[in-house]
Image (cartoon, rainbow, N blue to C red; front, side, top):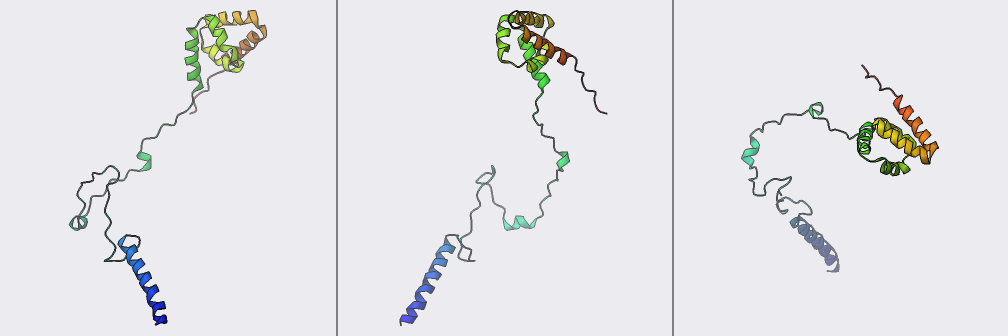
Length: 159
């Protein structure tokens, strides 16, 4: 009797565990495992009719394939230093020289060259005169940066 219990109890436990797992959908046993409900995905309506077996026999129209080259290219953001310099130059052209002098105190001379080159010549002249009154060496460095920027040529388009 003891041997029979040693065999029957594990078989019942394993069988009961398998039946429980099958009814909960953890394992698939045909006839025992419940059918899974199809949930609405990706913006589909929940009440949309599900395709039946009769609909699956008809041949659906194939969707037209879109090649990768036919897609519109995604623009990649790029920095345009010349555009930024032109906008800052336009802004600085509207400022008075005293506030402009305070604004450029922490700017590097190499950064100021392209902006000063894009600015109004009279405004740059006034600014350099004001800077030369307090710091002649900085006015000289700015003039050299301005000269270096003004002597640059635009690259010719590649053919």
